[in-house]
Image: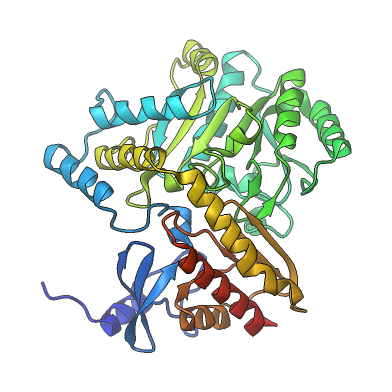
Length: 430
């Protein structure tokens, strides 16, 4: 079979493919054709010819080791020679066992049971189902709602959408048909004991109907790329304990070093009852996520009706995904990832600083390997994409945000190039 040309790819794509968060039909922006990916770089088609561009997004926050890493290539190739996939109902295998043990070893102490799924959104669905079924097993079905703070994002399926911000969030279209949840005001950036007290008062008011509190710890991702003081996590844990409510941390975006700690919960040593991980878990090779919970929670669910957690993805614990995840996590832990993330943070801080002087910029913020320029007005995607590509960088802004989450393998020069491109985009948008 002969390879398609870039123009043929675009023609088929325009005729038949629906991309994430995109329109279909005349006038829809044409996606950029990707030809190859290696290391921190993508080969893209721009102005009709191949160009090199830094993957400043880590391909939606997954490719922490870059693309085509030989260790990860070997892990998935070796596993392919043995077993590509078997159903996980009634069967198990070495890659799943190894990954489960590894996750138990590195996540906050007390999370000892692992449920594999095939996307971050499904991992959050499973977390919510665990929480609700836990209380049903204890004979308290009235505890069926979730509480969170505004400004969050937890995925695109229905339960995760129900805990995204219902006013002005990505999924406010569905507010009238989603399960009504309990929302506290947005968490402040700086620590404010009065906010924690008000959150607990609201939690206490609804405790008899709340199954769990769910938050993105330290970083709210696609809901606005906002950062908050980790001490709020300590306060959440204490409040949930006092009022008999479970605590769920959604670490899909923050897990595996992105914030400067292996998991965002590690900034203050807090263990939730349930935790979701994904994205960087596989190093960006294939899709896999996991929901971890305490043994006590798992035993309670297993002892109640119907005696099992009622969830079972077809591709649960896919052997290829588990094998490359083990290799990815071990590669991360075996290197000096903390120094690399700190170096990226330093580079982003200095690189983005000039944007503060621009009239169209509302804020500039950096945490770990995350850099954000928040604009006053919504980003013109066409202008942003064209400007970034002219500077040799692939960015994917959203809303009013121009941001980057680079691969951890980026050199200081590459981080500087990303920062320069982001500032250029901010200039072009001003």
